Image (tube, rainbow, N blue to C red; front, side, top):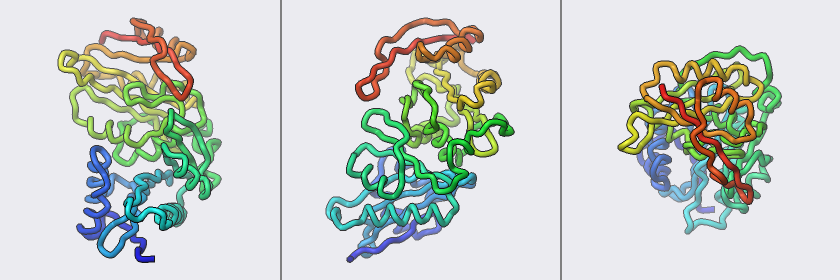
Length: 315
């Protein structure tokens, strides 16, 4: 074997950082560069990377929250080096790294079947799909199962989204519940993952009209609400409100909405809902949202199509 495994994080040399960065573009490049400069809050982040001399030829990244929920991502092998077991070796070392850090559960997503077969060999289990994008979970400790993470009776608090919330929000979005619309504007529906979407939220911080509220629990994040301002020039006072709260904590949704709508800078907000989600529809109507449109077959997941209702409130 002419290559070796190295760990690269914010303490590594600049040359090693630039080597793992060379494979990534757009939001992934921005997020990777930021995390390799300084940690995002209390999060643990780094790469298991294969090097041939000074050249990086393969990567897998790991992110782990303070509450020990993780995301495995950025799996890539240089095309010239494929077929040498690099992906297997880097994924194996990444899973071992999560174990050494005491991870409770790890999440990932993949759009290719041959890669999904690799993950299954390490114990990852399918938790949902949005088209070709399949989400998986590896439970490394009993405390990482759904019954513990989202157990009833947790002390809760409302707060703004923090830089190290990504892994915990990912756990919420991959939890075992049947919310069709998880986050309309970010394209998150039933079975969807939450990684690039988190980067989109992070990059909107500071934008006029943007707001985020977290429903925080003892074990993990139990809910997320956002107000995303329109990016269209003629809609500067408009935005989209969205929220996802685990069904065990549905009684906290009114408090979450009161918090996110308080001092909103925008003049009108739209919300999208599945016609069969009666709880969401009733809540919208009780809060003076008015139905303005029915959008047939607005969302398609595999061979299934979903109709959405659009609501609006003038603030």
